[in-house]
Image (tube, rainbow, N blue to C red):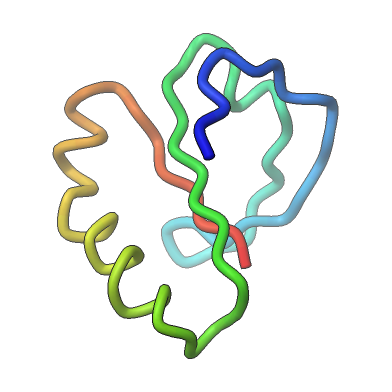
Length: 72
C-alpha cells in the first residue's frame, strides 16, 4: 500500500543505526523521501527477500536522497 504524500503523525521510536541506538521522530522524515518497509515478523518469507533487495539497493536510494527504514 502506498502512502505517498501522507503526513506522518508525531512519534518517537528507538532505531539501530551505524552500530548504536538512536531516537527517530517524525521530524526525521520532513522534507525527505523515506521508504518505510513494514514486515510481519522475523524469519518469515519477507525477511530474506524484500529486505535483501532494500539492502542491495541502499546506496542507490541514498544517492536519490531517500532513507530506508524497516519496521518489524
